[in-house]
Length: 608
Image (tube, rainbow, N blue to C red; front, top):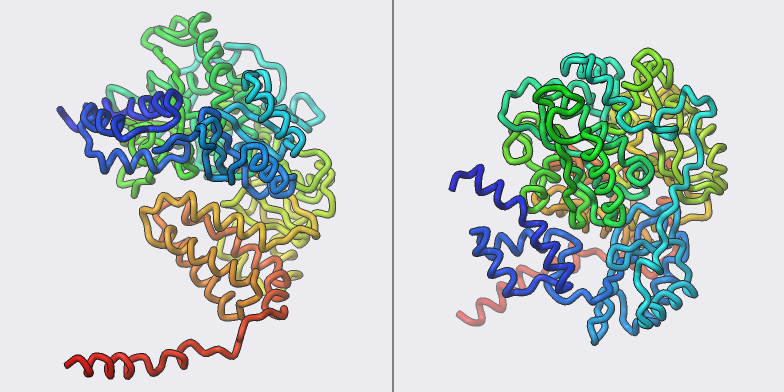
């Protein structure tokens, strides 16, 4: 069998693993033996794949598997009380399964419900706004035989804002199926790419790579097969705007994928849907079915000879790093979701070795709207560098958590007023891979204007100088906006972030794997008031090393929050250095072990 055929046949591996997990609640030793023979891969390699994904278990996970969100925002809303309520009702501690294998209770990172915390998934049915009383009712009714479907809370969209003028709204407005697709009858593929390039649309997942350029590069690579992959693995903590788009406008996404396929010459599209959004799968499947019935998917779409395109859904299994495009592709190929060194970019050799475009949900949903509105109208919205609107997922200490569609260019302080932020002190912008903002950033605008190299902001020592120099520098975000008041503990938030990156690192490169583990220990040391200035200097040094030498974007951005927090809020660290503790500062480790060599030598000599 050729290498290409081996990869292709293995692409069904994740589906097989999911079938076993759902049916038996774990993947057994016998299952592993059979699968390794069927796919002609070693048990060791297969074990590596299974163990990589959070939602695959090698021992029984319980008939009802409960995943409680333990991310930062959840910790602000009843997390501890809800966890203890589950433990009391189930009679087990988190991380365990009941003796009768009826319930399994586990932690998980952000499940895309930060505006409705505390939240959990039970067999991937969502449960929101949990309280101890609600937990007691849920467990009691499950034991009584009630279905999870009848008990679960389908998440609210919580669309809090869109531009007041209809003509300045891109996403959250009336949608007519096929309206944008009809435009393709009068446009050649190159013209579509030219239109998207001129719109300055860029990757809305956070990387902001120009969409038109990506499509152009893929089109230029000749191949008998090309793919369009929608990255719906919305794993960045605090982000949930893609969930809302998938629920409210799945047709808009499908239309965007079809247009992308037409532009680059792809005939197959795949939606890589994160497992946490499994409850949305039926709705997306129904939308695909309706497009087929309307002959907007299939052969010769819109009567254009040779314009063939189909769309399917591929289910992830719980791995933050699979938000990175090469890791996502590896996952789809039945491998561990590990990023590659990008000897070839996906537009050259992507899924199954073929040219592949990977775009975010929001990016693809913007495409049909640009065709509908027309380029000229679209370019009147937003700023010169970033036309259009941006979706932001808002959570934390504010009166109006939810999704906001804002015009690029809105001032940060104006946005804080819009969400009715309560004493905004620490702002976590762009998720755990983003940065901390403070009051010195309030005059900056949310846009891509006047961007500076990242390291420049760390050259400022004085907050006044920083505010003056950075006030004209834009802020770009993949979509997460978490706000915390002055009563929140910054170090606890940072502890949650560093633990997250320790857990989510794929482990393939040393700087990310080891560096984040060591930074987590340093945060512990500071929280215990055992640290000194040297520890802070080491945190900065190690964080820079991790950023510069990690293999992929996960590692390169994993220390952003820590570095920006130290820059913006030095007092939060200094007060721990000065606080009283039981730590013996006088203890000298080097002095304590200085006689070690002579003692060992003396012991060894006595045996000679």
